[in-house]
Length: 147
Image 1 (spheres, rainbow, N blue to C red):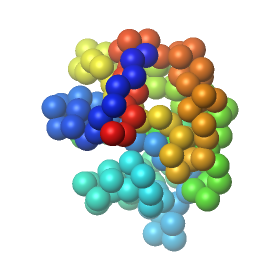
Image 2 (spheres, rainbow, N blue to C red):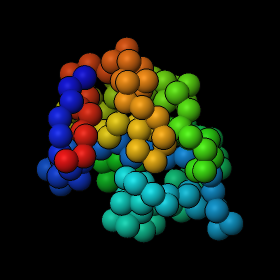
Image 3 (cartoon, rainbow, N blue to C red):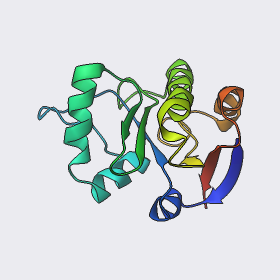
């Protein structure tokens, strides 16, 4: 895993897959709650994304989802939007990310860019999250700290 400082969306503009951190909540319309941070930015860029993700969460659950048409990986860090991010869920999502990469995405995109999951609106400290990511992510994954 590499770490850099920058803007995640700059890498997306260059055609790279990026990871959007999410939660497992749906609103009354059945749309995924994407109200803060990188999730809100994704929602603003792709207004139909909350509806599409909401449908997937309803059908499959709060797990890693991918949007191959947009190069987005939707990575849950929380069960409920109002709670602190969950380290066990981050570990589960990280394992799913590596599995998806190894079995589907590897031929399309290297590297994958992600923010520090759970460390902004999720309320976690990077010192607690980083060892989880380091356990599973190799140099095909780049963690982007906001500049």
